[in-house]
Length: 63
Image 1 (cartoon, rainbow, N blue to C red):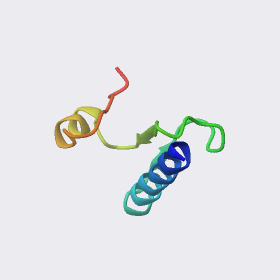
Image 2 (tube, one colour; image 1 turned 180 degrees about the horizontal axis):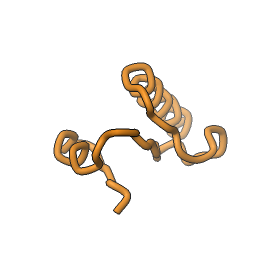
Image 3 (cartoon, rainbow, N blue to C red; image 1 turned 45 degrees about the vertical axis):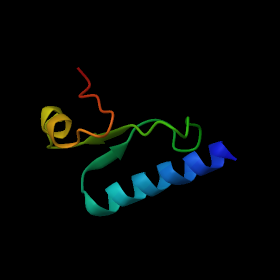
């Protein structure tokens, strides 16, 4: 099932980021979310820096 696989990948991404980075906030309801969309906020990191560093990932700086 695609939805289950996507949910597993999203969880893996979230877990990997939150284990390696401090001050990360998962935005939205953790149980009722579209599994193909991960919305995170990173305290003390400029959005522009993430946009430039992570070119192969779809990102938004919130602007």
